[in-house]
Image (cartoon, rainbow, N blue to C red; front, side, top):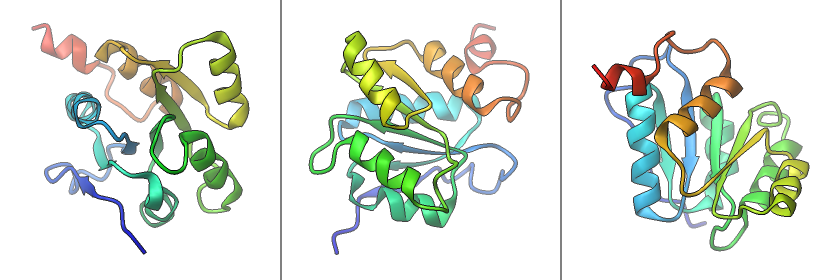
Length: 151
């Protein structure tokens, strides 16, 4: 079985009270932007460039949230979220679609597939942070990373 290339943020592994987010994105630049945003927010994160092991990684690490691209090679993000929602260990993990698909029909189809929210590319980091904070509720400090960087 081919295992997906993935990595976990090193300095955040020990800070287990911060949310753990699994990000699945096949474009390196997009994955770098997501990891930068998550780092600024103080999150622990696991990044994958291939979705073939996403369900296994989610079952093992039980992330607080999954950020999932829709247009992935092999399985689409919609297929992956359907598998996640069918698994008892991962069915309650919220998932946010991060995608270039931006029509109203795309959004409706994505949300109907089981995603909890949606953000279209390109996006601003503060918009991604707002969606993550909304989905995860009170698991963060009251200050946004964007606000802290403005000082």
